[in-house]
Image (tube, rainbow, N blue to C red; front, side, top):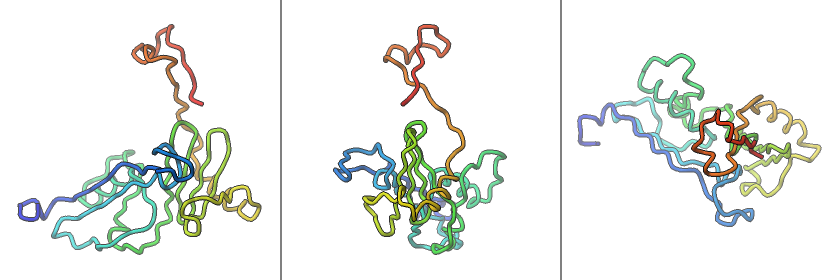
Length: 193
């Protein structure tokens, strides 16, 4: 790319798959809401001629949904109305130490959410149970602060960022039911737990 005519107008975005637990917290796999399983590598490289971007590493949590609005702004394209749900990362790309107060919200199965906000990682499960970690002091997320009285205000303030509604989803009872149309009388609808 460096030696082609596209070096001056090509943005490179490298995104990997989410993390994986290798026995941490007695987990083996990627189906969890702790940071070890939620982290996704993200590298953004601007065109050679674009001097707006400051090389470096940013530490705030950002979301994959932020990539599209970032590229729209970076390429000076007009935004498509009601299509940019994320936040442009250009403030972080132009100043790697910029203040970033935008939470990153992820989900795994209906009703289970995690909010990464600054040093805080807040998890709320569909059953209502909660976990709160200060990852600047407890990176492996072993000390759940959610039930401690001194963290009540922090827990409540982060809880206000949770989605007010979400798709509940249905789970087929058998593999055969997956191929049936949604309006089939034989297709049983089973709510996710």
